[in-house]
Length: 301
Image 1 (cartoon, rainbow, N blue to C red):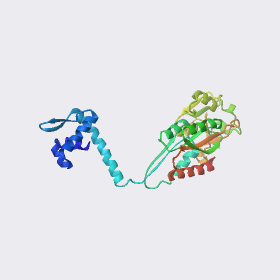
Image 2: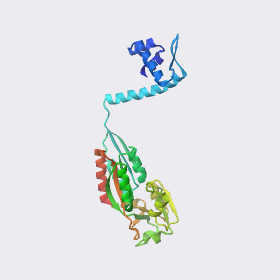
Image 3: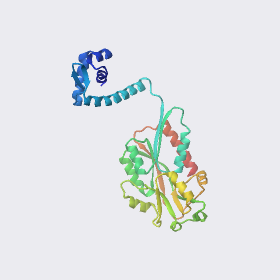
Image 4: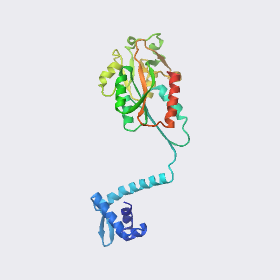
């Protein structure tokens, strides 16, 4: 490819030979082999020299990009790759996890860094690790799905470690009538609008079935959202809304003028599970995040 590019620039084999310090027969043979491999004629051999065919011009556009990338890789490793901090994790939408990530971000040095933090559902988190898009993940599921998920993680060759068990609380505006109640039951929520994340499903199970199991049936109005930041604005602006959440830090509740309460009818336990590929060796950044996660869990849950 380098020979062909030089011949295209020079317009002749002899001039390319002088520039490359390689014998003409060797260059000619290499180009013929390249043309045979590609199944096209790159050059038209004329009395004036070597002229690019239409296919050859198209090929040269690709060749220039490829060779530039090869040169960049060679320089990168020959001169020594700069130290780069890399970390990636896919997680459920949870305040204690995002707080841990914020604390973790403070430990980054001045070296180049690529850090990825993705909030999504359990199915997408497992998919992200399977496809090597992310190195760590945290999945969330109801305790009654424990056997199902652990069998699934074993099948997909993933290590799993329990982070925490918890029951959901309810958050609502401080101006909401719900905030004035000493005890909240499922029946108290009937006339309110629930804000819910739009992907609470379990892999390989119909979404309608899981939604029915995960959410009380007495709620007729729901707003489904994908972005976690939207939930706090909705809760703050609309006193007729509420949301099921893992425990929220007090400073965040104060920031959006929200109240957090338990529901006396809600007994269901949920699990947050740390996962990563079997054989993967945790990096120093991974260990630092897990340390921050443990501190945040102990502080807020």
